[in-house]
Length: 182
Length: 288
Image (tube, each protein chain N blue to C red):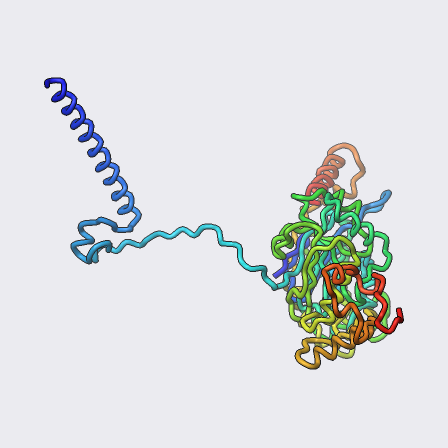
């Protein structure tokens, strides 16, 4: 079984899956966070975070799964209030209208959650909405094999505090903890 | 007379010391063998169970330590490739259960012979590979390669995996080295060394024409991957394989009676390794 791990995301890949776990280089004041792609077809280099350039290559039985991490500012918000990554999907969870880029015939789902102090979205695309029951077990095998390393807890008060003084020091410590973790 | 007696006495004493030393050395050897459980020369063993066997009441397990395994024949199993990218991200390329053929190019950043392949791949020009063959570059891991050097050479449109384990899995003798994997069977169907991409493309093309070769792109079942080479050859045998070979030769312009079918020297065989690249000899009827 092939094992991949980077940026606090790891998986023992089920047969037929390949993966790319990366974090884009930040430019300017931009902050980037880890992204993981899992697919049952060759993932082209340069694939967009949500599958741009890849989902058009999918066959009817293929699946494409994205784990996209958001910044710590999203922690505690209502959108990410679900705790723990979904490990099981049902065929009914796959919809034809939630795809970021609607490709006729495909289906997908997008779920938001927090695991290990890390806010994520899980984005799943299946090659055929009509035959969505067929690839869902493959997706579930993958979801059960993914491990997320918890991020060191950050004090939200420290994030909100302005630099300087004790609060500033706390924010710096928190930032360093994140830096070391990365 | 006295001198002779003294000399003989000294010699006898020395011989006695020598014999005593040899007996002691022999005893040490027997003791060591006994401690290893061999039971050689063990009087108790000889009495109880015959010569050379351990006593029935004191079975001795002979400890066997396995040394390094001997090099075996080259395997044909394929392995998925997992490692890191030159940027340090994780990347896993699936070559088994893939439904398409994958060509793994084992390259190094430091080998002179590899530079041509890096340049060709980075140019994004046609590589000559049959359509539907997936290409992936594999270098050794960051512990044996300089990631920045690999990054400077890495083509943008071909996945580059840094994995020493993959080099070990595929028993790569050196770089450049190429392995063609049939994703359907999960086996290697061709491997070898080449100096030019034309030779690699030729190697792949031969594997496809051969009955044991893979069918690219899963027989064209996937969307947007091209129809490939037709994938019709599959695993042929007997007359079907001969007919497929004849058809392939005709497609390449090699008709019955072509001089290239009747080489008279090694030079005739190796004058053109790339299909269609070498000048063709005139046919007996005078046509080009």
